[in-house]
Image (cartoon, rainbow, N blue to C red; front, side, top):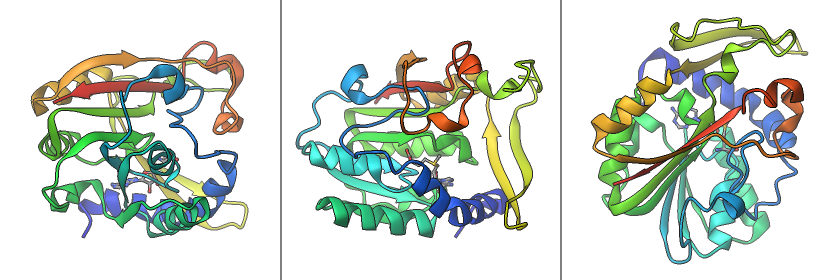
Length: 251
Ligand SMILES: C[S@@+](CC[C@H](N)C(=O)[O-])C[C@H]1O[C@@H](n2cnc3c(N)ncnc32)[C@H](O)[C@@H]1O
């Protein structure tokens, strides 16, 4: 089912962290797309165009907040996520909000298994940093999009990840990209492994070019307030390097 050891580690971490994570971002009113920490929202950035009647696929949907917000604006949404727990939250949230969204437990590496029905928009918020094979994912996204379809994704800004938020010094090399696995001890003393991929901007842009998608814009937003994700981010560092970067592509 999963691609290599890292996808399994990532799934295990998100299943374990899901409850805490959903509590942390429960301030989300599920009325707009929030692009990430201090990363602004669709209401301001207008990256997706007209939403009403559009078929949307969300990759790494977590608790489904983005798909639910877009469904309220008239889209027909499918959300996929590797984590069973996150998908459970997404289904509960959709029920609570009274909207109909298809949520499927599926890893990025298997999105080619989705029915060939094409999507007008593919969106992913703060999830693609967990993708093991970016080239394969982008090619699958291209195949799943209609002609002129839009793919918008946000990730943590690669520059932001290099800085130590305590002394604001560079703690890692930008060139040391690839899989990172961090051992964590949680307050209940349980041990967990947090895995993600650091990629250089050139790696990401070149993968987009190789996939056949056209890169239309890169956005590095800095919103003044962040009620949803803000607590884990140090304002002094946020003011120097926005923690979120957004890529807008078109087929
Ligand atoms: C930071 S959360 C973002 C969730 C959601 N997009 C949001 O805005 O709240 C990252 C999500 O990506 C999912 N994810 C990580 N690796 C994945 C993979 N290989 N395939 C599908 N989903 C994945 C996680 O389970 C988690 O729900």
